[in-house]
Amino acid sequence: MKRFCQSGSSATRQRVGNHCWRIAVAFTVTTISIPGCGRSETSTGQPADTADVASASSNSGVSDAVESQASPKQASRKRGRDEVWVDENGQKWFGNVPYDVFFDQPLSIAANQTPVGGGALVNPEMDATENIASSMTNSSNAPPVKENQTEAPVEVSGGAAGWGDLISATDLDDEVKTVRNFLNENLQSVGNFNSSMLMIPPKAATIGVLAGVAMQHPDAITWKDDANYVRDIAKQMNASTLQRGAKDQRRILALYEAMSDTLNRSRPADLAEPPEGDTFADVSEMRLVMMRMEEAEKRMRTEAGSESSFGTNKDMVRHEASILATMTRAITQSGYGYEDDPEFVKFAEAIVDASIAIREASESGDFATYELSLSRISTNCQACHSQYKND
Image 1 (tube, rainbow, N blue to C red):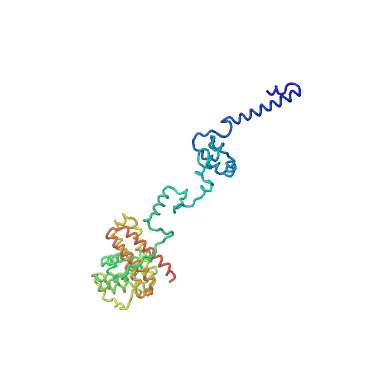
Image 2 (cartoon, helix red, strand yellow):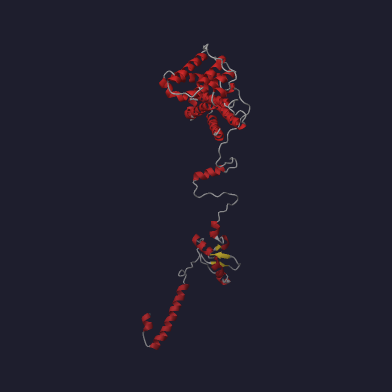
C-alpha cells in the first residue's frame, strides 16, 4: 500500500495520498472499537482484583470527574471490570460491584491501628506463647501484676512468742553439744587452736545466749541450775581478742574444761559466782550473735535448697530455724540498744515469725511454705542491714 500511495504523478499522488490517509484513519478507528483490543474488558461477573480496587480507590478524584459525564445510554451498556460509572438511579459502580463497598481512603483505613471495642493492640513480633500468656494475664479472674514488684518485709504476726515457743529443750541442748564438740576438737593443740581461732568467738557467744535462754526456758534442761555459770564462762572466753599461740590456747582450754564439767553436773568448786545482773548483751556481743544467725540461714539455703533435699534434711532445717529464731529474739533484749526501736524490733520479729513457720513446715513437709519463709527472712535481713548498717 505504501508503494501504491507513492506511485504516479504529483497530482495523482496527492489525491491518492489523501485517500490513503482516510483509509488509515478508518482502519485505526475500527481497530480501537474491536472488543479486546483496548484496555477495557467485557465483565465476566467476577470481583475485581484487589490491586485494581486499590488503584481505583486511590484515584477516586479522577474517577469522579469521568463518572459525572456519564449519560444514561452509557450506563446501560456492559462495563469493564475496572470501570467506574453511575447508573440511571445514581448508583455508583466499579465494574459490576457497587462502589459503596469500598473505603474512600483504603490506605488510611489500613494504617489506622486504633483498638476497636476496647481491644488491646497485639505486637506483631510477639510469638504465639506470648500471645497466650497475655490473654491469660488479661483474664477478668487474674490478679493485677505490678511491674518491678519486690517483696516487702513480712509483717509481725503479733504476740511475742516465749523461749519455749522458739526452741525446744532438745534443740537447745543439741546446739550446746555441737559447740562443745567443736571446742574439744580444736583446743587440744596450739596448731588446731590457731587454725580455728576466728571461729571460737561466735561459738562462745552462742553458748552464752543459749545458757541465758536455758535459765528462763519452761522445759526441763539437765544443767539449768548451773546455766548462769555456763553463761559466765562463755563470757570469759570472749573477754579479750584472741591471739595466736599457746597463751590463749591454754586459757580457752581451761575455760572449756570448766564449762564441760559444769554441763555434766560436776561444776568445779572454785568457780566464781557469776554476776546476777548480766544481760544477753553483757555476755554475747551482737556482732558474734548475728554471725550464728547468718550461718543458720546459709545452711538451710545450701543444704535444703530443693524439695528433695528439704525432705531428707528436715531435722537440720528444724534445728537451724529454731536457732535463728532464738538468736534473733535475743538481740532485741535489753542491753543491745534496740529494744526501744520499733522499726528494728519489727524486722527482728518478722524473722522470728518466718523461722517459726520454717520449723513447722519442716515437721509437715511443706516445702512451699519453707521456701517462702526463707525468702522473707532474707528480705527482712537485707532491709534491716540497709537501715542500720552505720550503727
